[in-house]
Amino acid sequence: MLKIPVNLQKKYQDLLVRNDIPPQIHVFYKKWLRYYLDFCQKYRYAYSDPESLPVFLHKLSEKKQSGDQKTQARQAVQLYYSGLSPKILLTEPSDQVTEPRKTYKTVKNEPPWEKALQTLRNEIKLRHYSPKTDRSYSLWAKKLRHYTKDKPPEKLTPAIVKDFLTSLAVEKKVSASSQNQAFNALLFFFRHVLKKEFGKIDGVVRAKRKSYIPVVLSRSEIDKIMENLSDPFNLVVQLLYGCGLRLSECLNLRVNNFNFDSGILTIHEGKGKKGRTVPLPLSIATELKSQIEKTITLHRKDLESGYARAFMPGILEEKYRNAGRELPWQWFLPAKKLTFVPEKNEYRRFHLHETHVQKAIKQSVQKAALLKRVSAHTFRHSFASHLLQANYDIRTIQELLGHSDVRTMMVYTHTIKSRTIKETKSPLDI
Image (cartoon, rainbow, N blue to C red):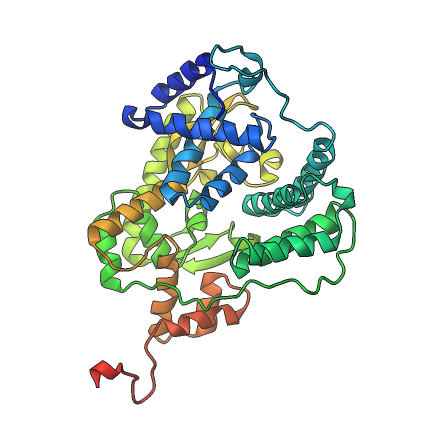
């Protein structure tokens, strides 16, 4: 395994201290950094390439690392990105390295692939797809690159992709949804980057689609979870359940999304960039207004302290340069600390991070001693199921959730009791 130079170790230790990382977990952060740099060396990624992080985390998944371990690994690597010069590993001598330095980048094959991956990202941005789509499509393109052992992109054929998709189902045992995502990503890659027609791709072994019934909580279980949540996480859960929001939709809310006079909440950054409106829960109107007051107070302090602006969506960053400093565009759930943007040389504020919410929910579920497996998305499932159980029209619920196809809603019919005259019972209860 790669030895980290002494000087780099010292700089990383300073970063750990400056960022208030608890001393008892320093050893784990250093371990993940060592694993990551070793990964970069093995798979010929540049030590400064953030695009390698999703692939590294996927490798951890393949090695059965837990979600908490992957989160800690990601934080350790992002800390490395934030404050260290990645060139130090290639240029700084160290008495701990006994072998001569090697050049880990393959000059012959890397430029065409780097160009292709950059073109892929440009094509995705041109269509205003979400950052998640960007990450997933880029990841599948890199997996194909690894599968073909750096075969030049222009020599790729649909037959190679067919073999790759088959290997995902047969060898990797991926789910049907993951295989479909890979197919869509590589279809996009062929059409818009390689400028080739994909053609028919028969004969692919399809991953078996498993029947899925979502986990749904009772109202009393939801109340138990919220009792153990502190501010602002309790408000997040109330919005997830009360409005049927996805976690990303909730955290991306801004002050201008709330219309208390009409009693509606507008979601602009929904899945697929689709917007919709949902009723605001009247029972938490006071808490929502209180949170906005906190945001207003924080915004005033930010402006006084030289804060630049909030992060803006898409082209609005350039179109409305001063909008990020205006109150309506501030995050409803702002992060506690400002984020330094090196390329802009300025401080901005991001919204509350999803990992903090997920961790808070997990701890609350453990305290409540629930027997169900609960995630942030479980509250959205509960929203739909409870409305369906209350005899709301299924198309109304579909619109509130932002689903484009009513067939997606059929899964929720399995989460409620049958309303036939004679209710189905277990043989044990007869």
